[in-house]
Image (spheres, rainbow, N blue to C red):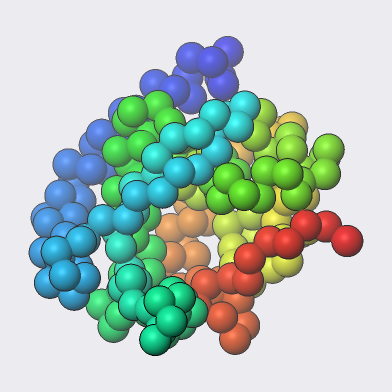
Length: 201
């Protein structure tokens, strides 16, 4: 009953109220990134959701599209703008995903949506992370975020899928607020974000 009725209602209600409450910040960040990224404040990308259904995620654009002399996109660390670094560190880049939650593409809590090209790399156990809607935050995010290994992250994701409940979701949301306030686990050591997933050895 929780996952089919209560959680969708909870997601929509909280996302809608949060978007209204955060609208002044949303506007300020949008204008700042519009200036920093040559008129492109938002980042759209295809991600696999529940049952691996592809949808378009929306986030604030924290990196430029800068390329090297050969036209190859530069590493994340070199493309991350000053305002983008602040937005990412404070997790403000996640705010537009509230729109995805309202649309029903995502949940407030669930495994984080990753890149479509990772789908063939998951083992049978890791694929279970797609049995539920992806989330803005999740069990892996409050237990290390980008500072832990991919394998550990997927273990946390599958653990959540098997044990999701209202109390667990509330616990994750409160712990997320704490993580955001202390900016913990934003990036992997030596990286602007985290190294790409290349499959489990």
